[in-house]
Image (cartoon, rainbow, N blue to C red; front, side, top):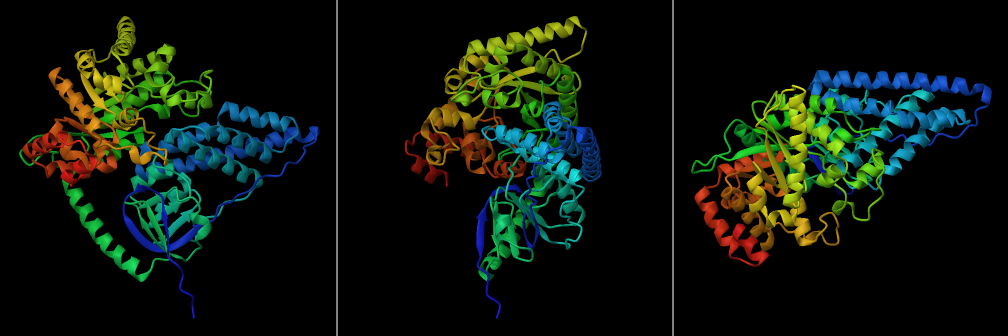
Length: 575
């Protein structure tokens, strides 16, 4: 008699929505640390030649992946492979490898040690996007070592159709294979929302959950599995009761998915006819198609930090220009709001752009607009790139972490300098380009009435505003429960910011996570929020929420909520 297997539930990070069930195909992780072999002086040139051939083969492999992604999803997504090519050709990493070989190390071990050194430097970086890039470094180094050894990694070639892949990590090449084999979904031990695998999964619309830690060590091929890409849950060997529950969950999800699909081309308009602008937040150009597909009418927050990754020097003006021009043209005739760099000392010190000392609290240190003032040449390059791109499509500029009027005026002075220089050089740009600021620091929220007089719009960054106002680190598990968007202080601040903007005759947007939660839509509408800028995946849900609310009712609700001083009572009224 076969022993009944125990149901195990894992909680991870949902990166691509949908619910699927099937059989596990385990893509085993190839963990190996190459042994050090002392190479005699007369054979070191031969070892360098081996490295050169392996690099050429790895480059060819990556380009093949890029072509496949281009064919399936378009050029936008294919650029994901370009990051791996940059890593492969990184001069610092290459120099380290060659130096080790010239000093007697074998090529495989030199590659391993050089990549491990870079990976360890990424461990203390707080930003999720930058943390994710270490997996690209690992992937490139593994490919290179495999090609040096003349072996091949475990293949998906023999996988059965409709299987569900479980792996420690998946490379972009693996994800392409998954699509080619019509695999139903996947789950990985590592990864986050900004990983390349996650972005490709969204493009393919394959349900996926990542960040499951040790899942791949707890399953074997053939196990039954359910992937809930909506909640980030993976269930191994589900019971009959769980299967029954998820059959109903799937029916509900599928019906909702169909309903949200119908809303794509409908306006974000309240029941009593008030039009609200719904925009998308993006982290890189690859997300523009996903934003449009989900019904966003523009980009309300384009985070530009990805351009500074894996480089020995900052991006050139030309790189900024080409990137913003292409992104904005893809979104045209809709607007693209480009946030100037929000990098901090914790990232730059690791990436080697500048000689910045480690900071004990980098999130309140030399970051964002403060960094731009310390290194104005970096800021001016980006501003010139944005301005030049504005001649080709509708672009707005937004400054992060403005804390007072002096900072705003300093930023605008540098912007004016960039404009003056472009005029002297007879280079076209939008002379009426709109300029806004993120309201994410309590001091800026308190004086929004003053700042608004010198701005064309404001956008509320609730993530930082809430944690700075409540003195709560929202990623610290011991105090995360104190991070409360419905705190009366937060609600009063939000109302004040929006009112101050309107009194100055400008619009108020919100690009923080609060804007992407349908639970808060009625309050924000009642406060008078003009624009919601949310993740592309959340856009249909926010549109549905807006279309099911009367503005008159939302205003009455928000007025009542502002009178309540207890969070639980606020939640009760909201529910």
